[in-house]
Length: 491
Ligand code: NDP
Image (tube, rainbow, N blue to C red):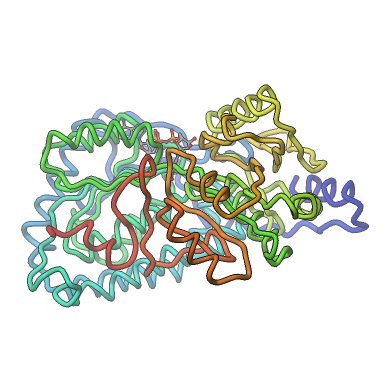
């Protein structure tokens, strides 16, 4: 399927050759027919016996049935986490906690191929990304925070920094394993125990990570994984035994959670949506900028909260940048996520595909001009072609709302001041990109852009040592680096 779609793309774009298929074997992972909840160190069915199916979004084939946690399971998991916190984890020296985190990191590396294939099957992302980005970065987070576990008293949080207790963590479907690592690693390093709720459409790698925790000998109850839908997440964040809530997902749900947390003592961090500007000046190295624009919005099908979804290009170079961008997009391979040639995989769910389709239609209706490279989409599964809208004005919905798909809105500017004003004209404030050869201009912009992360002459780079988080409707609190520890300490 991949090679057919890929060949079509390259053939129609004038290239004389296509790619031979290079599928990764799915035999490296064995998927059970059914999965239980991971509570108190063991897998068990939901108390009321309910379960749901998780499917492969590239084919719509069912992969497994997964237990759906209800309020009784939330109660059991929070109780197990509390017990493990009081009896084991809080009392354990940091150097001992670190050993478990190092072990988890090493097992993640050893089983990297298995994780990558499972992630691509359940999420639809290209294997090249799960193999080269998601899994190595997840392991890197455990290695990084393992290094902090025995150094908390030297981290600038006072002489005896205390953990918060039980962390309730709710994560989305765009980076299922990586978000689990972002949440678990700092929480555990700081001495908290965790109840993690993965997204309904992507539970499998979190459950494999639970197996890894078991394999690493992590004491029962330190990490619990409750699969389920929004109701499960809502029950978890409402539970009075949760001392810390960490959420990544939509701004809408983030606001609901903030309202719940407002009446409690729970500490809260929110990592929500974004509508980042990727700003290209006339002195930018054009070929590099093109790669940055492409990875900025088409990496992970654009299912990225910090995606560079608004391209702001200086008017004097807009034509040349758009010409080169179109040529580059015509070479992208769309299709089978397990094919190592694939650049653009499947959209994660029908619901998300409907949202992208609806917003793109709003772009047409509001008068923007849509362009996609010639590209035949597979017959089954959820797919959306790489899409560029030009003639976009700031009031258009596609310039204001998070599309969370492979759709780029292009706007132009003339002066640096105009670039800043347009970039900041958003309710969000998670990230931004700047492409210019002038270091002074980069610094000038970085001071003025209201965004938690500003990338210069690169985009979508992540490192466990680097704090990540937003302003305004993109949420509050930071994950990663030393600030990521503060989110799990009583400071
Ligand atoms: P949600 O915010 O609904 O999902 C994020 C997580 O929260 C999931 O685990 C979800 O469970 C859970 N959840 C849903 N409702 C509640 C609730 N009331 N209380 C506690 N937890 C809850 O995102 P969607 O998947 O619905 O995506 C919608 C849009 O959100 C996307 O189109 C995109 O624009 C944005 N988004 C942004 C992300 C980011 O990283 N900033 C990530 C994902 C989405 P379940 O999935 O099982 O419903």
